[in-house]
Length: 579
Image 1 (cartoon, rainbow, N blue to C red):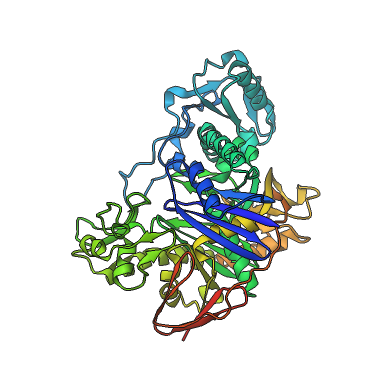
Image 2: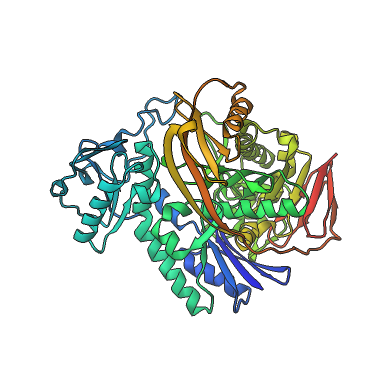
């Protein structure tokens, strides 16, 4: 069985072809048109017919970050037209009162109200469709009050808009995020509508290019860690905002499981950013909400934490003269100075090259120019640059471990991405982690995660009732629970004694539980999962290393400092341990 995975990153596009337990990899520079990069990476492997083609993309993320989405309108209950602009009235930064939130994706003149009012227990005022003004936009987000509980009014408004605007992309909040908290639901719906036309165009272009290249229609990785069809991804593109990083976590969990390690921290350092996530029992930790560029997205996602620290992160000094790294990146074009493509600003990759931690030629055919790196880093100490970027990544690793109540010493660190294995051992020393895993496919592990990923469709049902009045619940899934009167909830796996499990989870996280206090059930989350392909990796088990030493892998470079050593297992994964 031949399975293809292609992941598009900010600097490189990676491809993995799994066939007969063996993998072949390719790495090409990411082009301006992502579909061109996908096909180029597949051609690099000489791919013919495949049984499955899975894809991770940054198109949705880039469109949101660069504000290149559709011209969007917002329709809500009359009197709440300012919802997107009022937000939660919290500060963007606690100690910078003047720091501003990003501008809403919909200006106030395109925020419209419709008369009628739904309450949590039913209709309060009848819907008046004639009050819906003319809407002029390429996409429309509809979010009426309490539509998570009763979507009757919202369905009627959406039907009317689709009658008036048959060629416009329209998204209803009850379709994408049927949960309470009006601002978060509205934000998610607006982002989904804003991205719809852009992502649809890309996925259509990719589908056409894949067919022309003799490939099957791709499956697209969702933020929740499972793949879906291109039609599903195009319908709700907010579900693929962390598509590529989610695939990397899936790959890291598979590598850890093959090494007989259940609990691990996925550490993915690429050219522009670093993504970290905890995996417990072979599965990624998931969150119900994440913020992307200041906008809350109320959708299931792997519990990633991202920082702007990658191999291409630019080195600079702030006004006080302190050395800083990132979040600005040299990207793929021109790239780090040592790429020899016209870049002049110092980057982390340049520092690693001058410290002797990189070969003269990288995967993807990039010949490194040491003299250019020396010119760019004039006035900077390369070792200090590495210390600064490691400190930034260390903070991210502590967010997903210590701040989530996990002891890092109980975990292995799975290092991947083009730059991850260069920094992993030093970070492990700081965290107290004893074992570092570097898969043979470290440079393309996100693409391997695409190969291994399940098909997954998540669903949520809001309750907002006392737990003892909720009635019969599903046997599998998770429950959002809180003590009556609390503002936020904990996510607990469904089980026979759910109340006891919640008390225990509350005590584990906060140090106390209130056994006599009523518990409220906020929502039930379930997922329909079709398991992905099962396979065993076979790799070079003869590889061994003892620091200090530089070890080249097909798509990445490993720096093993003094005091660290290890050897590869039968799957080709390098298992490193500190002294």
